[in-house]
Each structure stands twice: as structure tokens, then as C-alpha cells.
Length: 286
Image 1 (tube, helix red, strand yellow):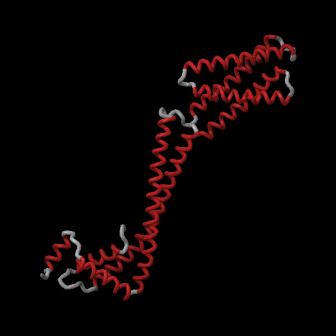
Image 2 (tube, helix red, strand yellow; image 1 turned 90 degrees about the horizontal axis):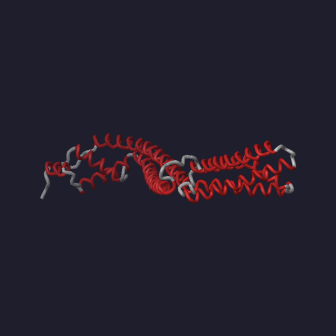
Image 3 (spheres, rainbow, N blue to C red; image 1 turned 60 degrees about the horizontal axis):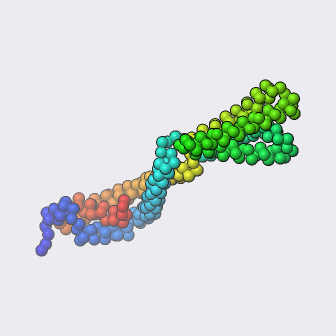
């Protein structure tokens, strides 16, 4: 049964594919490429751009997936280690500040260790051991923040250690430096207070410093976000290039379709649409 022009138009307006007309449009495109080398050259420009666009879209999709995974991991680590959101200092910054505090703590500790009357090398060795103890006290104060009993025991031990150092320093000043008892006690108390204050400051810094696992997770999420943004920008640039080539090709096709004879019982508008569909079929997902 032969279709009328009305049937063809009605079928195409309903969105039903017409394999016969599509095949004729594809053949007409092949004839156009053979007859006009310039159009084929334009087509050869669109091909690589389309392939590049596909690669950039895949890269963006992979980057977005990696970003989602990294952000989910960071959210999980944050909920575990910093649910209240109090830790705002980076791990590196916090470590540097704690190291500086320990450096300053070495001075009063060294003066206190001099009370043992050890040789210079042994004095600095004991000072280093006491610096390690100070770092442990900083970490202990932070770890026992929510444990009142353990925190009380730690504070008692710290107070005992500072009192012992103060007594030793007082005895050293009185017997060796021939200072008065009042001056010796004042100096010893000040040294112990300075050292204790530095330890408390270090503990406060640790309380606001992100743990290494959290810092790494957040850093990975930021890197993944930056990569996604870079991939999105690269994809948009390739799309603009593809769009430029595509517009040139489409304009050439429309101009040619106006002078190309449509098949029997097919309107010129349907024929132009079929040609555009055939051209689009060469570049899927565009």
C-alpha cells in the first residue's frame, strides 16, 4: 500500500522514525560529501572535536565521582573526629605551633635540670626527655578532655612534677647561686608556671587542630573538587569548539537542503529535518 504525503507528514510529526527517509537522507549526505570536499573538510574537523568532547565528558564524570567519594569519606571522618566542628586549624599549622611552644619550653626546663648538677651534655639529654614528657602532657590533656577521672590523675602527676622541679631549682639557686630563699622560690615558681602555661597552651592548640586523618580527608576532598572544576572548564572549552564547527556544518547543510530536491511525497521541511537527523546520527550525544 502506497503512503500519501499526509500519512508521511502525520507519521513524522508523531515522532515515529521513517527508516526509508532516513536512509535516503544518509545517502544524500554521502553524495554531498563527495560533491563538496569543503564540507568533508568541515566534517573532519567536527570528528576529532566530538571525540575530544567525549573524553572530556568522561573525565568530568570520573572527577565528579571521585569528588563525591572523597566528600563522603571526609564527612564520615569529620563525624567521627570533629562532630562539633571545633577543630579549625590544619594539622601542619597545629604541629608547627606546638613545636614552637616546646622550643620555648626548653628554656625553663633546661634551667630546672641544671639543679641536678649534671654535665652539659647530660643536662641537655635530660632536657630533651622532659620536653618529650611535656609533649605527652599536652596530648594527655587533650585526650582526657572528656574523661574527668583520668584527667584528674594526669593533672595531679603534672602538679607533682612541677613542684619537684621547683624545689630542685630553689635548692640549686640557694646553694650554688647563693640567692636568698625568697628570690629562689620566686624564680622557681615562675619557671614552673611558664612551663606549665606552655603545656596548657599546647593542649589548647591540639584541641583546635585537626587530626592527621581528618586533615588528609579534607585535603583530598578539596583536591577532588578542584579537579572537578578544572575538568568542567576543559569540557566547556571543548564544547565551545565543537559548537563552532557544528554551526558551520549545520549552516552548510541548511543552505544545501534548500537547493536539494526532496524525495517524492516528502515536503521540503521534512527533508531538511531528515538531513539534520542524518547529520546528528554521525555524532551521537551532541
